[in-house]
Image (cartoon, rainbow, N blue to C red):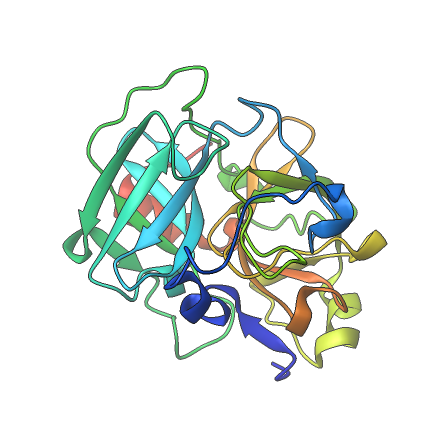
Length: 259
């Protein structure tokens, strides 16, 4: 993969370690101040979205896929513990939080030695579902061969903004899945188990969004896990680990499967 790509969480780890120094509140500039050119989510838009704070000071995202399970990126699970914030668009002031140690982390065995497997699971204490905390469905096993090209999806996160800080309020963007061939024209090569969305109108995921979900608009299912973007988050497609290619592994570890 081209050096233009960055692992999003690591890209901002040193910034996030000093989050108080880097102002993250909105400064009245509106959507143009947000790197992803997204929009503020209404409360309850993405009840599956969780904010992750790693004990090394970095931040990321994840998605609730079961009462005891969060899906995220494997590179978010290279620390000793993570605190999961559930149930509000304000990432660090949700309805509840759980701190989970690395004994409950599961990284795909293909990570980090082969591309396209940056996906991980967190086994969590039991979480009851409400209107603000709920799971997102995964693709069915009959969809393992589906590439979701041209599908419209939504990606949300609390990642980097143009002012150099992180969003305090959940930001979302509506994007279209493109072919890996189109994505490779920007990055040189893309693993078959990765997927990308087009950078229309400058929309892009960015540092701190890692591990969040890419979810289809119609009959919502999570088809991607946010993992990479272009340097600066402005000049290329957004990248994700393809969930449909990892359904067997997810079922093996969590027991979660759709048929």
